[in-house]
Image 1 (tube, rainbow, N blue to C red):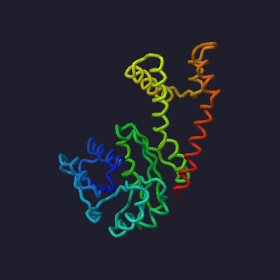
Image 2: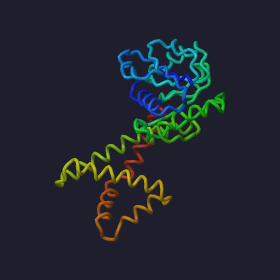
Image 3: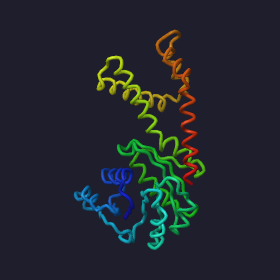
Image 4: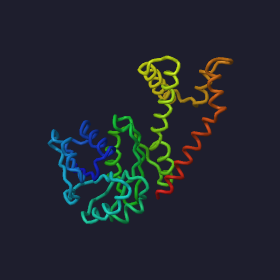
Length: 260
């Protein structure tokens, strides 16, 4: 399997690292392309990695992942059109399947991953142009399963996906930071506060995943009449936390639509 990648930034590096740590194919050869040649130093210990600054070096790849900034995507796609690549995979926000196919002149797969992919705990949403084969779909899913979970959706949902799972880690980090700071304000050390908050987030998320109960039911199981939890929840409802999160996602969807 000859897999190319253009752009080795944060997400590109995450994909490359996961593929090298847990290769999904025994014969995987990874061809990386980035204008910053110093990034090649990260891959010197891997005999099956080839680093270049010239897109033409990716000639002959079975798939090429596009991981560049949105403003630089179209010129790169036009260069890819010269290589006659069987299919491309794009993780570039705001570039539609129609644009990918038009400028690259090949089958296209669009993916929205998220940053927990760095540790194999991400979730990636995939959608395909009409000319992507069943085999190419399986190849793409195999790649992103090394980063975590994979979901297939129609492209019309990608703005919502971008605002929810794509941007979502930032919402979670903000809530974790705020809760740690609140605990510190009441005398807990930062290390202990972090441990308590992070463990609570992880455990609660796993319980939602495994219990098959609605989050509202799980919330009620923690909430005793006249107790600590209901008092704290009253403040959150009074201050509009539910509405803030709803509006934040809606604003994110609107911004994602503007990128199209």
